[in-house]
Amino acid sequence: MSPSKIATGPLVEMLGDEMTRVIWDLIKEKLLNPHLEMELHTYDLGVEHRDKTDDKARKNDMASPLKLEGIQVQVRPTVSVIVL
Image (cartoon, rainbow, N blue to C red; front, side):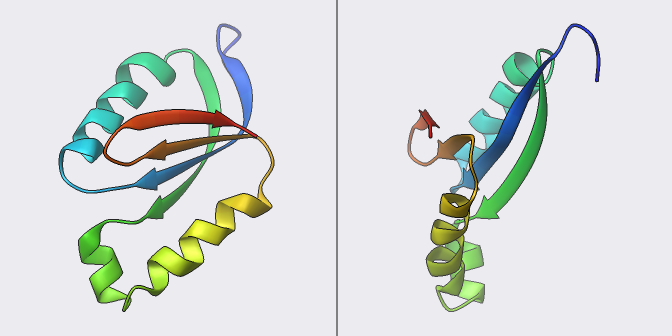
């Protein structure tokens, strides 16, 4: 870990569709990665992935982050940070 970075607890990113992915990648690249050392858990809740898994991705991936302790970052139509 870089001495100038802050270590976080586990971070959960729940990916949505289209522009939210682009915006979230930009936020991570410009605002978070330079300052935080993150353990990232990624769940794809995009329509294409849900269709491929017969919507099991949504059901399974929505419950998985609840088992982790720390900060949850959700990307949906908007970006919100929820401290657990």
